[in-house]
Length: 161
Length: 263
Image 1: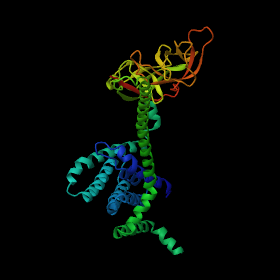
Image 2: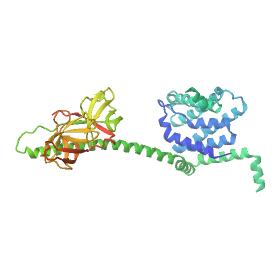
Image 3: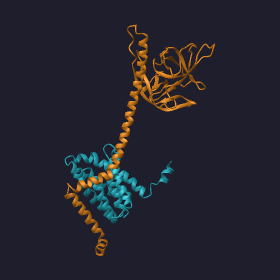
Image 4: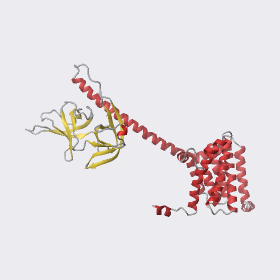
């Protein structure tokens, strides 16, 4: 396992948390970058890589609020391993099927954290933040899958202009 | 150690899971030792560099904002100083007279140059504010060094400024010390010069030339130029006075439109 790209992904995650998250938020809906990166790793890389990357991402997300560290790790590792297992067992040729898996992961992660942070406002958080955030992340995820599948390339973008 | 290596290789998946579970249990069961340690390592390794970068950018933005504010204040202070110096001179001349008019009151509107029209010298500029910001034709434009020009045309969000370096833009000027009046002109071959000054004038190099206030466009007392050289040959009626503008027209950036001036 080459470790350097994953360390760079973790730095990218930290960069997103500190700088870009606030900039690209739209009406309270932000991108769940951790879930986005972990889903991509779970679908394209090995189980061990997925496990350790999810643990490290959970620790990094939990560093912002130490009391949530264990919940962050659980809410990232378990769905990530499920996504990996599903990805290795069923045919995920279409982008839609991969996006559905990502949507499930997003909803599980966001819901667990929302339930732990504010149990009473959970329903409000669902339609105010979680669902719009999931849609936003899925749009970015869809673009990422199109790029990974070679459907969006620099050559094609240049041909448009 | 070979037996350990063999077990690790054969059961890599389970070892990996085992280590992850041990790490998770340590984090979960030791909220006062392991969790803060992990948090500290992650914060100093991953968050600190980006946090420093963000702070640096925010500080730069803050400094830029503060710089703009201070620049505006400096220009206001410089304008006040010019007006006060002029008032002092006026006071010295007219100290026996009672009941002066109150000093003129102005408001400064900061503007930025969008484009600069150059013909050897910069002669005109387009600024980023127009009649939506109460900019009107013939309002004076200054910077912290002195008079720059006047508004020539006004659009809703932009305006054009005729600079003092435009040969068609003449300003009535006054020698600050001697109170003599002349016309400040600019030509590409002579540069800035003071016209219509009698040959017997007491003007000398380094004298300050200010706007006279005559003509009603520019208020009196704004710094315009410093006398570079003054000469008159025998038999001449007028003195030839070359000036050095107080404003460097090649380096103008932030300008201020002077609004108001009601007495």
